[in-house]
Image (tube, rainbow, N blue to C red; front, side, top):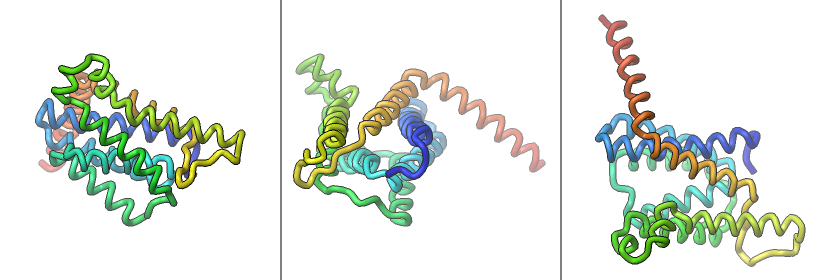
Length: 212
């Protein structure tokens, strides 16, 4: 179970999605390696906190990590820095007890999302399929099913699938907060980027003035 209140958990999910997208777009669209790494480090910290405190978050984010690695989508310096932050923290603090089968299911869904996203064959094949992968619905559906089974198990404790650990339904809501923040960061990237860029310019000016 998560250490802390629900408001903190949903906030960290949202911030993780926001900084993940900011890190990607700062590097890919602006070539700003510094901001890409800065946002990546923050993303890694928020995700790591969630993962070491929640088995549900472990299934989601460790699944995304493994799926992304297998799909060869970790391919720039901010990705590697985020990965190092994440691995360093979980090595120090450890992971909750989890079901390897549930992790495999989430990993497969994340992998399917990654190979379908930005795939030219998918784009040519079917518009609905392209939309499915654009918004990475495979993992969303898996989380929804596991969370629904978890809710069902509350009312029918005998309902079990051997080797599978279900999720809390609140986890599906938290993951939606992650996804919405990710998409908003992409849609409003230019305004967000300009705000961060202005902040860092002011901060750099203050730092230089203090050293003169």
